[in-house]
Image 1 (cartoon, rainbow, N blue to C red):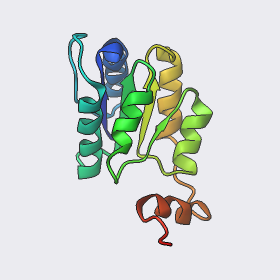
Image 2: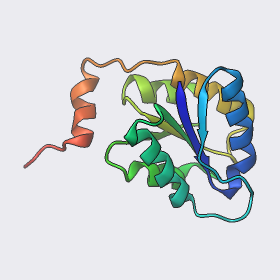
Image 3: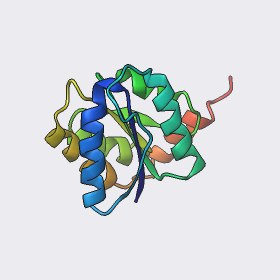
Image 4: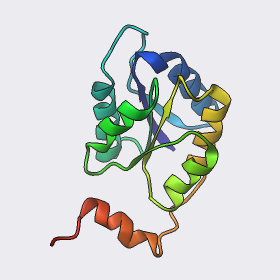
Amino acid sequence: MKIAIASDHAAVELKAELANWLREQGHEVNDLGPELADRVDYPDYGYKLAEAVASGTSERGIALCGSGIGISIAVNRHPKLRCALVSEPLSAALAREHNNANAIAMGARLTGPDMAKACIDAFLGTDFAGGRHGPRVDKLTNPPQD
């Protein structure tokens, strides 16, 4: 699978570890940066990740910052992205199964490497259930008109 990954300075080390691990798992990884732990702004990297997934150059996205909150907000500014902030595998699986999330966000200050890998495994290994969830997800792109 083609996976985009991006972070801010607070998550550079976790991003590098996850990118290497994903490559070892056989995935094609589009590391959108940053490479150094110099201060950067999470919206810049969240927007890069959103564009990579929305354009189809990547099938899924993994966004990281200190808490995961800021970068998830940035990613979700793109109308084609559904980025879920996750902290354990069940939330990552449900993000795919019920919400058809195409990206997840995690906080490097809150989620260690092993838990992050478990979340990614659950996210990548779960399909969208469709059914009753389909119309709900459609409303995220096309809100009902009053």
